[in-house]
Figure 1 (cartoon, each protein chain N blue to C red):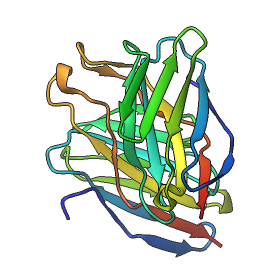
Figure 2 (spheres, rainbow over the protein chains, first blue to last red):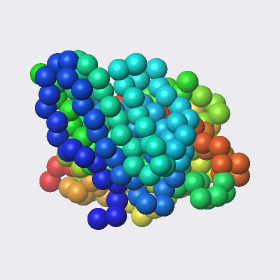
Figure 3 (cartoon, chains in turn green, purple):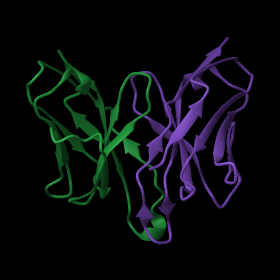
Length: 118
Length: 117
């Protein structure tokens, strides 16, 4: 499967623990996005990268959240001192911006990493 | 920032009937409006999109209309089939293809479509 892959698919943790999610985008895609989705809601934007540069962060992304994309390929999203309100599906998506005129805007999503904080 | 509202939250239609889902957006700079379909337990997938330089786009049984003045856009599914049952999300962003400038996608809250036999 050459689509966006996320790991782990499910994570159950106790409140106060740290968790890290990994996303591997489609190989030629240079943009990578993190979204959070709770039950019955649409995906909420968290942050996005173009190559290794983090271009925008949502106000939803508190200082307990940090995302990296060190080599412009895979990305990690870390949540420190998890709270029950962090329970959600964390979706990663990638898109291709090959040339300005070819930026279709289509996001390709991964299957998501479901976090449950007890 | 952009705010996207979507209605209805649930929609039940009989197989063969049409379904219409409506969205409004707040940022007049938004010019790219995709629709994503998310089946239960699956990832969201793009089904159709429209840019602000056109008012309507059609792909087989699916069509999207855009009214820039009123800042609303709609998804129309004709001759619905059971496999159309899913959650549908509208979204909006500013995406200037000529310059490569693109803002993040802001999603609506979703419409759960149920197609009954």
